[in-house]
Length: 282
Image (cartoon, rainbow, N blue to C red; front, side, top):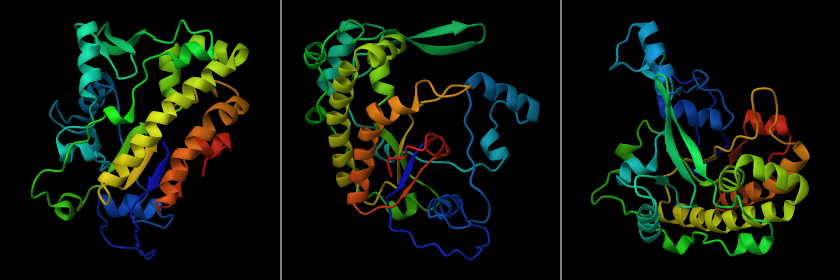
């Protein structure tokens, strides 16, 4: 994850007794010393069941609460609904009854193995492309299609954010979306043999995500604390692709998203993954 602080936060470096969730996280983001290091928890449903059973906290219990983990909040829980592209989403549903198709045209289906289940990519819409023209002819989403929900009438921002750190990861994905659209094997081959088509796809993804990010930050000014990117460039044993390819094909787009944030006057922090790559966009 990569996080950027959106609020102008002045938290004392002096040890504060009993910092709440918000104070702990944002003090650390400010590169100051909180009461303790912030840490979060997430797991698949199957793993979570095992942990809860081992800890003896029952099916209604929370592993995160048991260990006192920090949490991030989503803006869209306050607005009840997130951004939508009504016409495109309706069109995708009508063409794929019963399927899970995202705004990019990627179809995923639930696969069950034993007691576990996961979403498998079953249609990569750019798997057939051979040229930049093929990429350009695709039906790409446009930020003008997006409907951003309004805040509820009488919404009390200060009360809602007392203990919350609002993180939005909905816009920045220069690697994750293209590989889903090509399929991983196809994109790896294209990076080696036909990189111009990958560059074209990354550019088209960015034209949507960068404009959407700008609109979100403007509409919800003061509500979002952090923005992030959840793209995974690594596997268990190392990078999925060379550092040189990451630097050349994906980091420039990532950098432009964070430059947008910096131009709107907020500070930045990079992740361990970015330090490992030594190709931070910040």
